[in-house]
Length: 176
Image 1 (cartoon, rainbow, N blue to C red):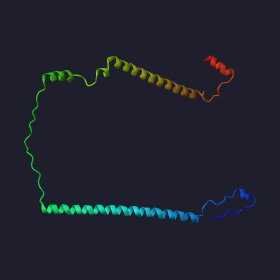
Image 2: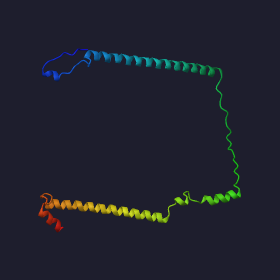
Image 3: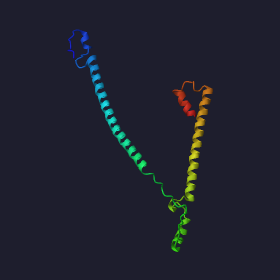
Image 4: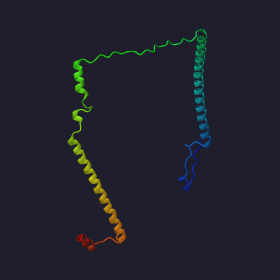
């Protein structure tokens, strides 16, 4: 690293010291060392993968040779044919007490009574729906009237006039 050279005059305030900063050769050397370590790690990982794959390949070739030997020594056995006759399943009728319980519960709706919508609930929903639609229509009307008012003011030139101030403003407020 370079030593700091003292300077005199006004330039001394603006000069940077280079004692802490490495020069370009030192930076290049550090980058090259990083590359060497990274490439060494990659090489080691690749070698480990190759060794692992070599072991798997050896095991697979051994399994293939064993299967070929078995196939040559013993012919493959055909699975036994299954009978094509359908199987009869006997279903016994329900006992009378279970039949009665089944008939009572079979016609019930899937939703319990406390969750069922009642007529009053549907009426309240319809009222709320109508109220929301009325609010939306009123909002549309307000927006349209404001838009029309702006268009009329633009045609009449009211938007280009200077706003009223003082007595004229008070008179306009009293008039409206």
